[in-house]
Image (cartoon, rainbow, N blue to C red; front, top):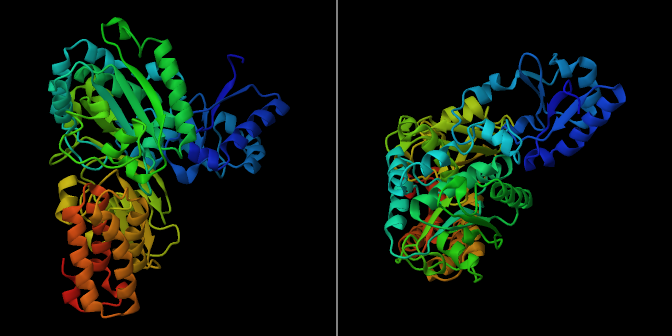
Length: 521
């Protein structure tokens, strides 16, 4: 390719592919060849502006400019308008970094997403890749752990447990053999941040896990990837191979005495395997069934050995902390929620995509300033945050700041940061029933409150909707939810009542209930 060739970026992220990115890339290359233009089409990750995908970017003398959403039918017109020189067009958005949706974000974890080619080590290194690992290896393991503790990073998988405390426990656990496991079984509705890391910036996950392995004294790691993510699995496997070949995995990493290897494991296709102990069972080749705790996985986890388990975003946040220092991360956020959270806007939303922001923005600001309201143009009636087991929030609660404690105070969870919008046509009784049905289908079946409670829950919701002695049935439903919360072995059963009760409490009219007494918390 000529040195004078114009570089055009077309994303290879799954969302962009689903919207025709491969066809657009081929059309751009073919049309350039017909016109005799020197063009190099490169496949970058996604910026996360899914409402503009495929988002085509062109490197011009002035800036990297964006056009989107681009279809094959638009390609000829783009060339005619002079898009290779960054000229205006109906799909023109100006310099990519100046697009308001992107410019207003605070990107720590996703700083490279959409900018680099996912499997280019040179790109990764040019954008401060492995700087965190180099700094970690220059310290002793205990110092690395304390840096993560000082950052205030909490698990981004839902429970929000302090990451550094977990690492400290594994580091201090007895035993020569320890493991690092990444829970990448991203199954919550409306979530895709894990997938984006794995597909669009895989080396940051590898770097974060390697830092963890050094800190806790592990030599083997596993990435347990959702089976429905074939592109992520393929990208990770190639990235692991490239990292190993370049000395960032394997023996004597970066000339140090540390050894660490990573194996990518395809998940079992079950939601329950996103629960950490069921995931460990699955990795060991067993049926994905929840283990009773204690013992904690940090002390007796994979194959009975001390195991550091975090999700993708937790590990992917670590390289920034080690490269920039704990204070740079700690200085952002609110209360005990430090740093940033990649939020995912989905459902009936006008501008769906990934938004990484410091903790503290309100849900209303996220919905209106970034989401642009509903795709249907109708009023937002409810928002579910935190996946299928998260609460349905009423518009009266939209001013709640996105903060773990603030959400807990209103009976909600931030979880993995999935935000799903519903307009005023939604039937909240059906949504409550769906939560119970989902649990009954996905339960591992080990404990009675979850296995039987969810099945009976579907029946009780149906009776309430049918008008069969509603007051008595509402009491039965609340008692049933109380049993599930307090008697279930894991979060699958204990959290299922959250969406059910939030729908019942905030939208009683959909259940045929009008008396204020029936809205008691």
